[in-house]
Amino acid sequence: MARKKKEELEGTEELEEKQLELEDLPGVGPMTAEKLREAGYDTIMAIAVAPTQELSDSSGMTVAGAMKAQIAARNALDMGFISGTELVERKSVVERIKTGSEDFDGLLGGGVETQSITEAFGEFGSGKSQLGMMLAVNCQLSKEEGGLDKDVIYLDTENTFRPERIKQISESRGLDPNTILSRIMVARAYTSDHQMLLVDKLDEMIGKHPRKFGLIIVDSLMSLFRSEYAGRGTLATRQQKLNRHLHALQSVADKHNMAVYVTNQVQSNPGIFFGNPTTAIGGHILGHASQFRLFLRKGKGGKRVAKLVDSPYLPEGEILFNITEKGIEEA
Ligand code: GTP
Ligand code: MG
Image (cartoon, rainbow, N blue to C red; front, side, top):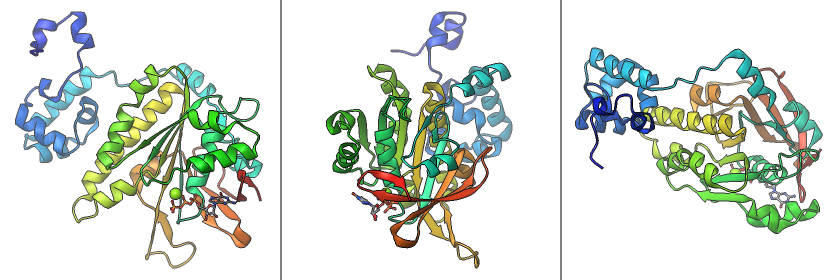
């Protein structure tokens, strides 16, 4: 369809329905749009919230020009202000998914919350994927049993999703393994762009699906980003993309009252000589985006330790749990 000029559409419903493209912004031609997209600014929202200087640097526009495009982008958007009353109403529908361990639930203030991103980071074998699979089962339980009675979306970036494990956990908890499995939609992501695209398409997918979803799992959030953006000078691009990805996850979570659980890797931090020399990767962008950050590690006698390191209102704390045939259990 030939694109109509915006003036022709002014005041018509067509304009409201029309998704603005970067090329619709003042001073942004096809070449500039291309450069912006390459730099990761591929939506009107991304333009609206970007640092003006970076927009200018990455596109070759003057700072004044970039600012003009940005003001137009901001005007075109519903920037998402909501009243305090509405905020209270929204937060009051926050629900929780139980982990399988009461201590663990206690650490999280009752379980993994909807409308928030919960991140688990830790070394290999610390239980990050196991917790993900456990939540995928528990999300489907009734509310009385500590679930949401909703289906699950599982983004698998490392090919570590194990249907047999889901079956085992379900069976040992007296649930029908085939029903449980059929309510987990698994997508394998092969590149970070693919991973981002899957999340960008989620809203549409959720809208079309006959059942409701309560949980998105991304296992692992960072592995593809980390391997693809390993070179010097690529960190800024990686962080911009990660930022967009996290915003997309948060917005689906808010809109559909879903929980988001992501796993993350650690890197050894040679700057720390005392305490545990490992930090989550993803930097401040991830640190700020995930409302609940859990550090998982192996403890004595096969037990696991979960430490809440960052949360908006809960105290920091540490608990023990077990990984068993039944998934996550009390230590
Ligand atoms: P990476 O993805 O490698 O970084 O690790 P991770 O943190 O995701 O580890 P994961 O959650 O896969 O935990 C693996 C550990 O869970 C294993 O070392 C086992 O101790 C335990 N585990 C996995 N499957 C089973 C099972 O079927 N039964 C029991 N009892 N334990 C299991
Ligand atoms: Mg894993």
